Image 1 (tube, rainbow, N blue to C red):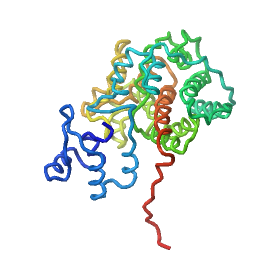
Image 2: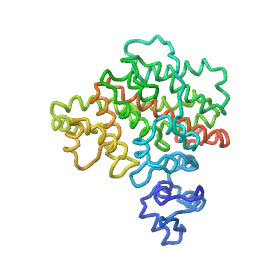
Image 3: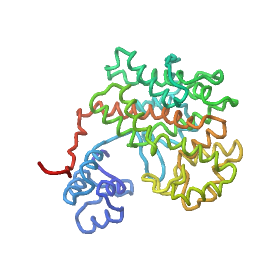
Image 4: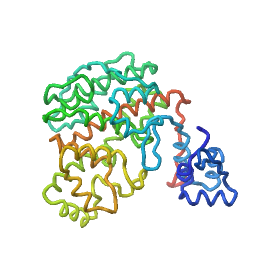
Amino acid sequence: MESMLTTSQAARRLGVKPATVYAYVSRGLLTSQKVNRASMFDVAEVEALAQRTGARGAVAAVTDRIRTRISLQEHDRLYYRGRSAVELSGSRRFEDVAHWLWTGADTTGFEFPEGQEIWMALPDSATLTDRIRVAVALAGAGDPLRFDLDRAVTTATALIADVVESLPLVQPPRGPDIADRLWARLSAEPPEPEVLNAALVLLADHDLAASTLAARVAASARAHPYAVVSAGLGAMEGQKHGTASTIAHRFLLQAAADPVAAVAERLRAGEPIPGFGFGHGVYQHRDPRADHLLAILRERGELVADQVIETLPQTFPNVDLALAQLGLTYKMAPDAGEAIFAVARIVGWIAHAMEEYAEPGLRFRTLGVYTGDRP
């Protein structure tokens, strides 16, 4: 129901707690409707109340106009087009989930092309994510049809294959799937691409995360898919987004010797514990992606992450910690989690771009609230 909001969505738009939303109902300021036993609220009515109360300002008004059918976060669960992301990660190939997110068509055996290695001369200090960003830019420059937005699915499949192919090869790939190809570039350990496939599926989309919003803004300007992905990668490069798994990886390396001391050192310095859900704006009690990926890794042996988790019962691990543990378990580079995140999230960015291409262009033009000297 595109014209209705859940209680949590209405609360987020109004900048209040869910209990306050129900208080508005009791005071006659909002009307609640029961849909499948859940309280739902009319978008127009919530928006009118938000305008009267001045809730959250212009940015909220813009982002809350984004209607998406791609992913849903509800009750500490994640769904892709109505299907559990956790269940999909254990039953479907990354390629098939990508096709599902892009088209809504339930297929099996969807194939990505072989991909071509994009030669690039980068300094030794370049990270895996640096290589991905350069590969995306070069792939776009080499595609004369990049502005044909109707080719977004074809463009995305070729781009992901090219990005993976452009990462340094560590061992021969075991098979043709993206998880096989990416494993061969991240780990010299015996291949377990099913673990990597699960991680890729779990990270494919996450509603309007910062990088996805950046991608949608680019798509609103009718940027081609390569530019959309570049916009997403730019936001992902931030310390509080895609790079979080690298910071968590280095923390786990420190915690392997003495987890309590590693946590105590962070607390003493007043620094957050990497990979944990302190103040998480989406999940309240658990990150289902982290829970599932850590459960898979526990089948392979003891985890340093679990030793840290035991010292922090008041919070919960997020997917950054799970990615860090994945890298640690299979002796990957510290920034391997960033590469996994980037490859996976290209799927979501393209899916959101395809939705945005169907909307009026340049709809995210907001007005700043000027606070400087008056002329």
